[in-house]
Image (spheres, rainbow, N blue to C red):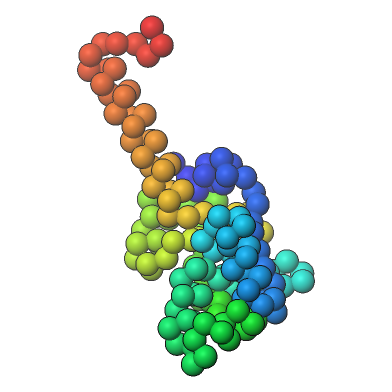
Length: 152
């Protein structure tokens, strides 16, 4: 199974925020869209980084003003910059994507087709897809072993 199969199911849409937007806007978008990360895009819609719930929580622990100052900071101060963003390509295997998630301890992965950002997938998306595939294969094997034809 390939990454593009998840993208096809989810759709080619990415929730994003600008690097100069206040973190408060990123927090609102995360809550409104029920997502755990946003890609950070400049005015030309080019990737500048990614900001996740985890980035925001970490900043609360290290911010000298604690909760008060974080909301007003620009996203660029908290985001993971583009040179550290790990990406996937639409033709990558899901097993490879799962390895990226686990080896790097991340939960969100921007997906590219050549130089174009298509979507962002989560570790949950990959787990659900792999689980569906395993369930399908198990049912197929059970039908084969028992001699039952599906749909009859």
